Length: 129
Length: 261
Ligand code: SF4
Ligand code: SF4
Image (cartoon, rainbow over all chains, first blue to last red; front, side, top):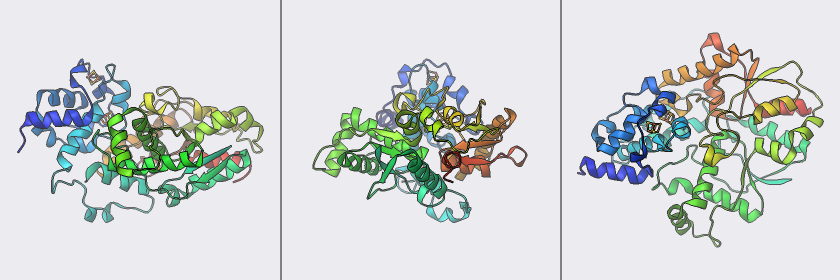
């Protein structure tokens, strides 16, 4: 089992983000359209990964509610790219055996006749490996 | 004006109209869209992680086919455009990803991001020109007040997408003017529709969609145009009944204006 520090290093490497660039202005969280549906917010992901607090983030509902809208990336004054950190944390979890968040059995009841294929492919890519 | 064309899965199924009206309009405008002989699903979301390689291969194959055909690669679905453009940027700028992808595909000629990726709207603006397009309008959409919905994927990140001003775009409004209609500006035209989260947390998507559509409605729009099947779905199916507006693919209005609908 990896330590939290080791996981944090992997997440940083995988994301390509340097959390030390963050000046904690909170603009990413201020602009995040999923803010209300998150427990930890984008700026917290950046600082918690930097501090090695990974176990809490792996439990976070934010890794599923991030919309990948890239508003936080566009609007961060320090080019930190918080969405990449959130994605790297999600991958840390779903790449583990048995940790797929979206199972194919669950799909039929989520469908309606207008739902585009694109939605299903996207959700599988984001939530499962 | 000949382009290699990547339609993507959704345009072959739930979003056939987006594709069909694009082809009819292209013909009227003298644009030759040559669909790639073989293409695979782009994956619909850009894999952001540095160590994601397999999920980028289908985009690279499409990019290589266009290069080999000697054309720029035209896209239409916002999501396909986003994924293919960003993967192309990785191939041009990230030496580690470029090496791994080429090692995997082993093409005769290595690929390093040479293909130019252009969205259909960019073709209208940069190759046809909106002034020329306006001259070909036979059925001006006079009196229609249209809200352009950009969403996220065409615009962000601006440094890679280079589609338009990421915070104050104008390409769709310029198209609306060229078609003889009136563009309506509104606050949420480049805020997220809810995306794939509709499958995970529907209330989030409902809140997002309603906030976009109500913002357009409050600004006086009769309808909203989009280039994305998932935006189309969210803005329609996930919008509160009291706020609904017709959501239309931009290509349908274009075909109408050009008299080829
Ligand atoms: S916007 Fe950028 S600098 Fe500001 S808190 Fe977020 S990540 Fe840090
Ligand atoms: S990409 Fe995710 S974290 Fe960033 S602003 Fe959008 S929803 Fe929020």
